[in-house]
Length: 250
Image (cartoon, rainbow, N blue to C red):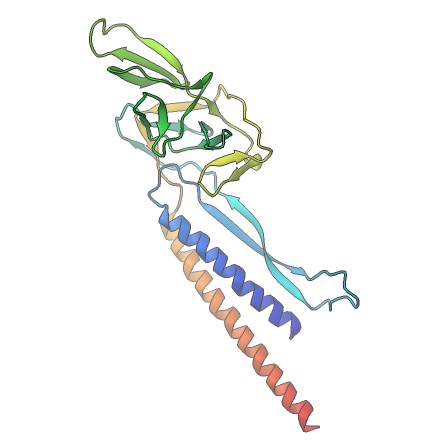
């Protein structure tokens, strides 16, 4: 009965956490470049330095791992010059508010009032020599290797100038950690090196890799698991009451 109570109680709590993660995935079905989050649960025995030691029947259910599904999403053509998607594996590098480097697949970019190439949230895009500043009254094009080229809209319109290159990286996925802001970081806080094999697609955006049907099925399954765990707790309570009556009768 002890094992039943501990497993059912902690299982119900962790199932609620998984439900929250699935709900978050469903909320980001249409978010550009979003990567689905996955939770895995397992039962572990309770360990303590207390004397006497806890009974071996006591176990907790814990969130064993929080994984990310790095499967690429579908490519969507927009034709916008400041939209860029990663073709295959890789990431766009941005400068986070604390000065560190973050990584995203959301290539819906824009220009600040000062002409700095940045994300929709206002974070500067990292270039090969820092942030990238675009002069006014130019047409912008982003090459396959991330090179940002501009053509004047007036004057010598056949003159192409390269103002820099967007940093494209492909760090080991096992070393990436998702932050609360949705950006990924290197586990050790270092900056990933430029990867020449990462290719960009100008005029495209990558959709979310969340499968809404699969997530809805998972949500229904988790709801049934939660109901079952609550019923197990109720059964344990009934068994405890019945055992107490038998003992008191003696």
